[in-house]
Image 1: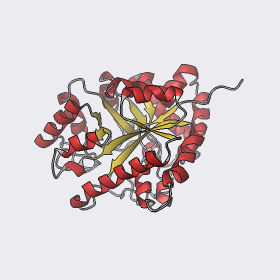
Image 2: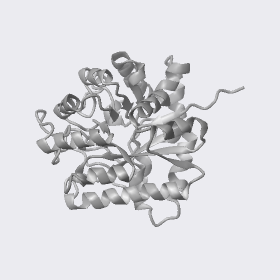
Image 3: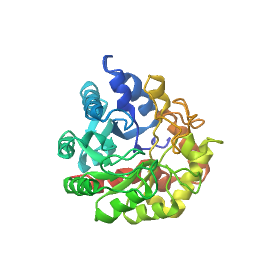
Amino acid sequence: MPDDPPFIADAHNDLLMELVVRRHEPNPFGRYWLPPLRAGGVRLQVVPVYSDPVAPRAAALRRAIGQIAAYQRALAQNPADVVRVARARHVAALADDDRVGLLLSVEGAEPWEADDDLADDFWDLGVRMAGLTWNYRNAFADGVAEPPDGGLSARGARLVERLVGRGVILDLSHASERTFRDVLSISGDAPVLVSHAACRACCETPRNLSDSQLEALAERGGVLGIMTLPFVIDPANPTLDRVVDHVDHAVAVMGIEHVALGGDFFRQTGRAGVAGPAGGDGVIPADMSDDDAIEGLAGPEDYPNLVEVLRRRGYEGERLAAILGGNLSDFLQRSLPL
């Protein structure tokens, strides 16, 4: 009898931006995203709200609400295939539910700059994970594209306290090293993760984590979602083997229980007309296109190719299952409200 297909959980996929672009089409999630998620074995997908910090700040809240509305439409239009994930019991139930679970997050707190109380409203709308910044400085924190000595602002520290009080999981992707350390120092034992990044020891870029950051994240019980874009894996040699080099390094530094997946695939959304992040800022290469992808891993439908390479490199049984989905699933069950 063949093995059961792996349970794959992915900590970051910007598919909501495409759903907004296609909002006048009938059921764009069911047409463009459900098939590749199914083909790849993805059973739990974190979907971020991204409002583009380079755009006028006044547009941030409108963009965010549009993506949350797209999330709600995806759920309503695909009840037999998709389920909302907002509580620990929702994650646990996926083990016996063939539907794909979608968990809503915020990538960059720019939508809340007009009013910190909006963070509570977003919780009520289903947001359960939040990052304070996306590469650049905002009212709350500095990102990795800013000078290295910039961290949390006083307002950002207050926002962290508010998010912790509500039970929001803190995502430290895109945070400057000082912001990363500041958040860890003031957030007590609140759950933290890095949903999508890779290892700086394997590829030198500010978007990746140093070994000391990997160690600090593991000490807090967090997880790292391995990001699979060439500029963080190896721009000169963007292969599946190089992705697994990052997995190996993270496992060696953090322990296998802290390593997960955070694909951040661009190709599908780019081909749909969604503009990718601007390059040339010292973090994202100026020549990176929306079509850039790891060879053999352009979208969630290609996760079986990654599974094959992981197995070839010695990951089997519980170790393989942990990386593919078990670690992120366990983390969310510990971190989300019951």
